[in-house]
Length: 265
Ligand code: F6R
Image (spheres, protein in one colour):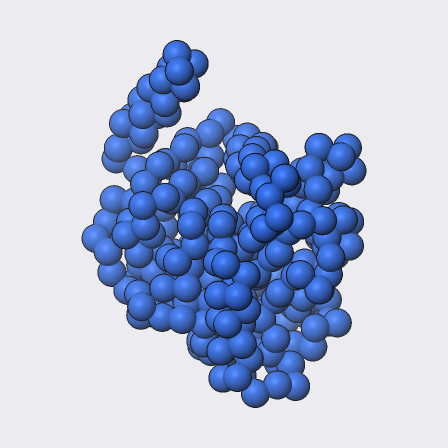
Protein backbone atom coordinates (compact mmCIF):
# COMPACT_ATOMS: atom_id res chain seq x y z
CA UNK A 1 0.00 0.00 0.00
CA UNK A 2 1.19 3.49 -0.79
CA UNK A 3 0.40 5.72 2.19
CA UNK A 4 0.75 9.44 1.44
CA UNK A 5 0.60 11.56 4.59
CA UNK A 6 -0.24 15.16 3.78
CA UNK A 7 -0.25 18.37 5.81
CA UNK A 8 -3.96 19.19 5.60
CA UNK A 9 -7.34 18.17 4.17
CA UNK A 10 -6.72 20.75 1.40
CA UNK A 11 -3.50 18.95 0.44
CA UNK A 12 -5.43 15.66 0.33
CA UNK A 13 -7.92 17.30 -2.03
CA UNK A 14 -5.15 18.59 -4.33
CA UNK A 15 -3.39 15.21 -4.35
CA UNK A 16 -6.63 13.39 -5.24
CA UNK A 17 -7.53 15.93 -7.94
CA UNK A 18 -4.07 15.54 -9.48
CA UNK A 19 -4.49 11.74 -9.58
CA UNK A 20 -7.89 12.01 -11.30
CA UNK A 21 -6.57 14.60 -13.76
CA UNK A 22 -3.57 12.46 -14.66
CA UNK A 23 -5.91 9.58 -15.56
CA UNK A 24 -8.31 11.80 -17.53
CA UNK A 25 -5.46 13.38 -19.50
CA UNK A 26 -3.91 9.96 -20.26
CA UNK A 27 -7.25 8.81 -21.65
CA UNK A 28 -8.33 12.00 -23.43
CA UNK A 29 -6.77 10.91 -26.73
CA UNK A 30 -7.90 7.29 -26.32
CA UNK A 31 -11.20 6.19 -27.87
CA UNK A 32 -11.93 4.39 -24.60
CA UNK A 33 -12.42 7.08 -21.99
CA UNK A 34 -11.62 6.78 -18.31
CA UNK A 35 -13.91 4.84 -15.98
CA UNK A 36 -14.08 6.40 -12.53
CA UNK A 37 -15.51 4.90 -9.35
CA UNK A 38 -16.97 7.58 -7.11
CA UNK A 39 -17.89 7.90 -3.44
CA UNK A 40 -20.26 10.17 -1.55
CA UNK A 41 -20.07 11.47 2.03
CA UNK A 42 -18.21 14.46 3.40
CA UNK A 43 -14.66 13.46 2.47
CA UNK A 44 -14.74 13.73 -1.37
CA UNK A 45 -16.62 17.07 -1.45
CA UNK A 46 -13.38 19.08 -1.72
CA UNK A 47 -12.21 16.80 -4.55
CA UNK A 48 -15.46 17.35 -6.46
CA UNK A 49 -15.20 21.14 -6.01
CA UNK A 50 -11.64 21.04 -7.33
CA UNK A 51 -12.59 18.87 -10.33
CA UNK A 52 -15.43 21.28 -11.15
CA UNK A 53 -12.97 24.21 -11.02
CA UNK A 54 -10.41 22.44 -13.25
CA UNK A 55 -13.17 21.48 -15.70
CA UNK A 56 -14.36 25.12 -15.79
CA UNK A 57 -10.77 26.20 -16.55
CA UNK A 58 -10.78 23.54 -19.35
CA UNK A 59 -7.79 21.74 -17.84
CA UNK A 60 -9.78 18.48 -17.98
CA UNK A 61 -12.88 17.20 -19.73
CA UNK A 62 -15.37 14.56 -18.60
CA UNK A 63 -16.83 14.22 -22.12
CA UNK A 64 -15.35 10.74 -22.49
CA UNK A 65 -15.69 9.61 -18.86
CA UNK A 66 -17.99 6.94 -17.41
CA UNK A 67 -18.65 6.78 -13.67
CA UNK A 68 -19.90 4.22 -11.17
CA UNK A 69 -20.89 5.18 -7.64
CA UNK A 70 -20.28 2.87 -4.73
CA UNK A 71 -23.70 2.84 -3.15
CA UNK A 72 -27.23 4.14 -2.72
CA UNK A 73 -29.72 4.00 0.14
CA UNK A 74 -32.78 1.80 -0.19
CA UNK A 75 -36.12 3.54 0.32
CA UNK A 76 -34.91 7.04 -0.56
CA UNK A 77 -36.29 8.34 -3.89
CA UNK A 78 -33.54 9.50 -6.29
CA UNK A 79 -34.91 13.07 -6.34
CA UNK A 80 -34.81 13.33 -2.53
CA UNK A 81 -32.04 15.55 -1.13
CA UNK A 82 -30.74 12.61 0.95
CA UNK A 83 -30.23 10.23 -1.97
CA UNK A 84 -26.78 9.65 -3.41
CA UNK A 85 -28.24 10.26 -6.90
CA UNK A 86 -29.09 13.77 -5.72
CA UNK A 87 -25.74 14.23 -3.97
CA UNK A 88 -23.82 13.34 -7.14
CA UNK A 89 -25.98 15.55 -9.32
CA UNK A 90 -25.68 18.55 -6.98
CA UNK A 91 -22.02 18.17 -6.03
CA UNK A 92 -20.52 17.10 -9.35
CA UNK A 93 -22.50 16.02 -12.39
CA UNK A 94 -24.56 19.14 -13.04
CA UNK A 95 -21.42 21.32 -12.99
CA UNK A 96 -19.24 19.37 -15.47
CA UNK A 97 -19.30 18.37 -19.14
CA UNK A 98 -20.21 14.73 -18.45
CA UNK A 99 -22.81 12.78 -20.43
CA UNK A 100 -25.36 11.94 -17.70
CA UNK A 101 -26.19 8.63 -19.41
CA UNK A 102 -22.59 7.60 -18.66
CA UNK A 103 -23.04 8.08 -14.91
CA UNK A 104 -24.25 5.12 -12.84
CA UNK A 105 -25.44 5.24 -9.25
CA UNK A 106 -26.98 1.97 -8.00
CA UNK A 107 -30.73 2.05 -8.66
CA UNK A 108 -32.76 1.16 -5.59
CA UNK A 109 -36.13 2.78 -6.07
CA UNK A 110 -39.04 1.02 -7.76
CA UNK A 111 -36.89 -1.88 -8.99
CA UNK A 112 -36.12 -5.47 -8.14
CA UNK A 113 -32.97 -5.06 -6.02
CA UNK A 114 -31.32 -8.37 -6.99
CA UNK A 115 -31.83 -7.54 -10.64
CA UNK A 116 -30.53 -4.01 -10.13
CA UNK A 117 -27.40 -5.32 -8.37
CA UNK A 118 -26.69 -7.80 -11.18
CA UNK A 119 -27.29 -5.10 -13.80
CA UNK A 120 -24.87 -2.76 -12.03
CA UNK A 121 -22.15 -5.43 -12.05
CA UNK A 122 -22.83 -6.09 -15.74
CA UNK A 123 -22.52 -2.40 -16.59
CA UNK A 124 -19.13 -2.23 -14.83
CA UNK A 125 -17.99 -5.25 -16.83
CA UNK A 126 -19.27 -3.77 -20.10
CA UNK A 127 -17.40 -0.53 -19.41
CA UNK A 128 -14.15 -2.51 -19.39
CA UNK A 129 -13.79 -2.11 -15.61
CA UNK A 130 -13.08 0.76 -13.25
CA UNK A 131 -9.72 2.46 -13.82
CA UNK A 132 -9.63 4.44 -10.60
CA UNK A 133 -11.95 3.90 -7.64
CA UNK A 134 -12.20 6.77 -5.13
CA UNK A 135 -13.03 5.65 -1.60
CA UNK A 136 -13.80 7.29 1.72
CA UNK A 137 -13.71 5.21 4.89
CA UNK A 138 -16.13 4.86 7.78
CA UNK A 139 -14.99 5.20 11.39
CA UNK A 140 -15.42 1.41 11.62
CA UNK A 141 -13.36 1.02 8.39
CA UNK A 142 -16.32 0.28 6.11
CA UNK A 143 -15.80 1.00 2.42
CA UNK A 144 -18.86 1.63 0.28
CA UNK A 145 -21.51 0.28 2.61
CA UNK A 146 -19.56 -2.92 3.21
CA UNK A 147 -20.07 -2.99 6.93
CA UNK A 148 -18.09 -5.04 9.46
CA UNK A 149 -18.43 -8.73 8.69
CA UNK A 150 -18.84 -8.19 4.94
CA UNK A 151 -17.41 -11.02 2.88
CA UNK A 152 -14.11 -10.03 1.30
CA UNK A 153 -15.41 -11.83 -1.81
CA UNK A 154 -18.69 -9.88 -1.93
CA UNK A 155 -20.22 -8.30 -5.02
CA UNK A 156 -22.92 -5.63 -5.40
CA UNK A 157 -25.79 -6.51 -3.08
CA UNK A 158 -28.11 -5.28 -0.33
CA UNK A 159 -26.42 -4.62 3.03
CA UNK A 160 -27.92 -3.73 6.39
CA UNK A 161 -26.33 -0.57 7.82
CA UNK A 162 -24.90 -0.71 11.32
CA UNK A 163 -26.34 1.55 14.00
CA UNK A 164 -22.99 3.38 14.02
CA UNK A 165 -23.17 4.17 10.30
CA UNK A 166 -26.80 5.26 10.69
CA UNK A 167 -25.78 7.55 13.59
CA UNK A 168 -22.84 8.99 11.58
CA UNK A 169 -25.12 9.71 8.61
CA UNK A 170 -28.04 11.07 10.66
CA UNK A 171 -26.60 14.57 10.09
CA UNK A 172 -27.91 14.40 6.52
CA UNK A 173 -31.43 13.42 7.61
CA UNK A 174 -34.05 15.13 9.79
CA UNK A 175 -33.71 12.53 12.54
CA UNK A 176 -32.06 9.16 13.13
CA UNK A 177 -35.45 7.53 12.52
CA UNK A 178 -35.34 8.78 8.91
CA UNK A 179 -31.97 7.15 8.16
CA UNK A 180 -32.50 4.03 6.02
CA UNK A 181 -31.61 0.63 7.46
CA UNK A 182 -30.33 -0.82 4.18
CA UNK A 183 -28.38 0.17 1.06
CA UNK A 184 -27.26 -1.34 -2.23
CA UNK A 185 -23.47 -1.32 -2.33
CA UNK A 186 -20.65 -2.47 -4.55
CA UNK A 187 -19.05 -5.48 -2.91
CA UNK A 188 -15.51 -5.68 -1.61
CA UNK A 189 -14.51 -7.99 -4.47
CA UNK A 190 -16.11 -5.56 -6.94
CA UNK A 191 -13.98 -2.75 -5.48
CA UNK A 192 -10.84 -4.91 -5.53
CA UNK A 193 -11.31 -5.51 -9.28
CA UNK A 194 -10.66 -1.81 -10.00
CA UNK A 195 -7.31 -1.16 -11.72
CA UNK A 196 -6.32 1.30 -9.02
CA UNK A 197 -7.84 2.57 -5.78
CA UNK A 198 -7.44 5.92 -4.04
CA UNK A 199 -8.74 6.09 -0.47
CA UNK A 200 -9.10 9.53 1.13
CA UNK A 201 -9.32 10.16 4.87
CA UNK A 202 -9.03 13.25 7.04
CA UNK A 203 -9.41 13.97 10.74
CA UNK A 204 -8.65 12.12 13.97
CA UNK A 205 -12.02 10.37 13.81
CA UNK A 206 -10.57 8.18 11.04
CA UNK A 207 -7.21 7.49 12.75
CA UNK A 208 -8.15 4.10 14.19
CA UNK A 209 -9.80 2.95 10.95
CA UNK A 210 -6.65 3.92 9.03
CA UNK A 211 -4.35 2.15 11.50
CA UNK A 212 -6.45 -1.03 11.36
CA UNK A 213 -6.62 -0.84 7.54
CA UNK A 214 -2.88 -0.40 7.01
CA UNK A 215 -1.25 -2.12 9.97
CA UNK A 216 -3.81 -4.64 11.17
CA UNK A 217 -4.60 -8.13 9.90
CA UNK A 218 -6.83 -8.66 6.86
CA UNK A 219 -10.21 -9.42 8.32
CA UNK A 220 -13.90 -9.00 7.52
CA UNK A 221 -14.12 -7.14 10.86
CA UNK A 222 -12.13 -4.33 9.18
CA UNK A 223 -13.55 -4.24 5.64
CA UNK A 224 -10.95 -1.76 4.33
CA UNK A 225 -8.14 -4.14 5.39
CA UNK A 226 -9.04 -6.12 2.23
CA UNK A 227 -7.27 -3.33 0.32
CA UNK A 228 -3.96 -4.85 1.49
CA UNK A 229 -4.64 -7.54 -1.14
CA UNK A 230 -4.71 -5.02 -4.00
CA UNK A 231 -1.44 -4.23 -5.80
CA UNK A 232 -2.28 -0.61 -6.65
CA UNK A 233 -3.81 1.16 -3.67
CA UNK A 234 -2.96 4.67 -2.51
CA UNK A 235 -4.16 6.17 0.75
CA UNK A 236 -4.08 9.98 0.74
CA UNK A 237 -4.58 11.03 4.34
CA UNK A 238 -3.93 14.09 6.46
CA UNK A 239 -1.73 14.11 9.57
CA UNK A 240 -4.73 13.67 11.85
CA UNK A 241 -5.97 10.57 10.05
CA UNK A 242 -2.36 9.25 10.10
CA UNK A 243 -1.97 9.88 13.84
CA UNK A 244 -2.60 6.24 14.82
CA UNK A 245 0.00 4.74 12.47
CA UNK A 246 3.07 3.27 14.15
CA UNK A 247 4.96 3.32 10.84
CA UNK A 248 4.16 6.92 9.84
CA UNK A 249 7.90 7.78 9.66
CA UNK A 250 8.46 4.93 7.22
CA UNK A 251 5.63 6.12 4.94
CA UNK A 252 6.93 9.71 5.03
CA UNK A 253 10.45 8.50 4.13
CA UNK A 254 9.06 6.34 1.29
CA UNK A 255 7.34 9.39 -0.21
CA UNK A 256 10.55 11.47 0.06
CA UNK A 257 12.43 8.71 -1.77
CA UNK A 258 9.73 8.49 -4.42
CA UNK A 259 10.05 12.26 -5.01
CA UNK A 260 13.85 12.01 -5.29
CA UNK A 261 13.56 9.06 -7.70
CA UNK A 262 11.06 10.87 -9.92
CA UNK A 263 13.26 14.03 -10.04
CA UNK A 264 16.29 12.01 -11.13
CA UNK A 265 14.47 9.92 -13.75
C1 F6R B 1 -20.13 6.73 0.55
C2 F6R B 1 -19.39 5.62 1.07
C3 F6R B 1 -18.98 5.54 2.51
C4 F6R B 1 -18.24 6.78 2.98
C5 F6R B 1 -17.86 6.66 4.45
C6 F6R B 1 -17.16 7.90 4.97
O1 F6R B 1 -20.42 6.54 -0.83
O2 F6R B 1 -19.14 4.74 0.33
O3 F6R B 1 -18.16 4.42 2.68
O4 F6R B 1 -17.09 6.96 2.20
O5 F6R B 1 -19.01 6.43 5.21
O6 F6R B 1 -18.03 8.99 4.93
P1 F6R B 1 -17.51 10.47 5.23
O7 F6R B 1 -16.64 10.85 4.10
O8 F6R B 1 -18.78 11.29 5.28
O9 F6R B 1 -16.79 10.41 6.53
